[in-house]
Figure 1 (tube, rainbow, N blue to C red):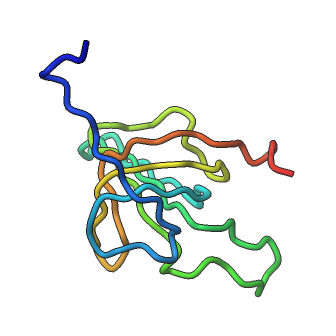
Figure 2 (figure 1 turned 90 degrees about the vertical axis):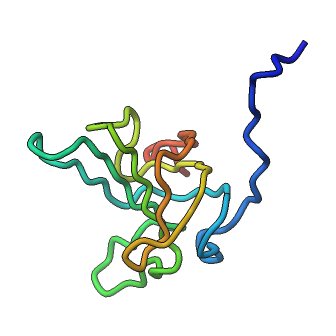
Figure 3 (figure 1 turned 30 degrees about the vertical axis):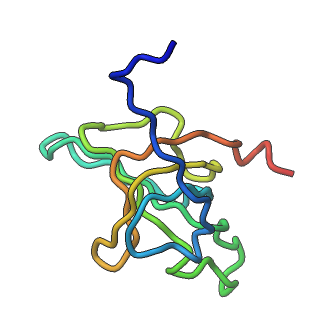
Amino acid sequence: MVDSGARLRPAAATVPLDRMPGRGRIRSSGFVESVTILPAGEAPSFSAVVASELPAAEPGAKTASRRGRIRLVWLGQRRVPGIDAGIRLGFDGMVSEVDGLPTMYNPGYEILSLLENES
């Protein structure tokens, strides 16, 4: 029996990061490129920039384009366990553009793999 008060999250379309819409509910995945932790004096917030591919290690090599990135922000969190640079992350939620970069607040997420486990 299903609880009538329970609300199911509507299915979101799976979207590659380089085809991110300006607004709407999406599901996607990518590699965490960087994380930002605010100082203790600031309101708690933790953010990660996720790219469709990891930046190349060689100087002058091609990196992921700006269109292939999204910023994920967890409000009220100083740290999100398991979210570190280099991991592959699946995520879903509402996306909107903030300061020229697609941004998603408090996304649902799933750690897909760690960098050292990639082959």
